[in-house]
Image (cartoon, rainbow over all chains, first blue to last red; front, side):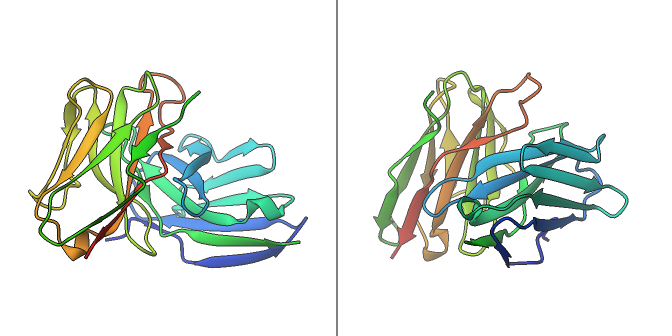
Length: 113
Length: 116
């Protein structure tokens, strides 16, 4: 049973425009959410995170929004750059316990120069 | 500083053989995780170590899988009697528990296991 879902397997965006990647979750016990970026033949690289007590967290070009009532989060990248082209994974965890991450299936972002 | 390293980067083995996959976490990170990523999927949790002990092994698929971390640093994932369905990328991650940034896990490049 997939508790974290990324329903868009791929997304193409023009350089300089905004990229919006979406993620939905089903487990209301999740209280911490993370986005990872993955290049081929490399492990996932941590990008940005958000606690369930917040609804927004911003770090440079990256902003994560959390809508707890809808069990939905999104990652905004603006402006998008060709180097942002990668697979993006949404992940969630429960801070009480092992903190093991539950991952979505990923969205492949292609930023077109 | 040095990140998480994993060896070997690739492993091809025959069905029924035994394999060991190694993970060197970031120095000082007390928490260590193993995940498995199959084609087209996100990583799936296998086991979590806090120090030397396996605090949560609920993700191990069956008793052919075992992991150790005898000195609280390097960890080895062991798979007995490998099956073709074990083919995947095995990822190791570490994190520093007890700090405000302890929830971020830092991943190694993974070991691609192919069982023929």
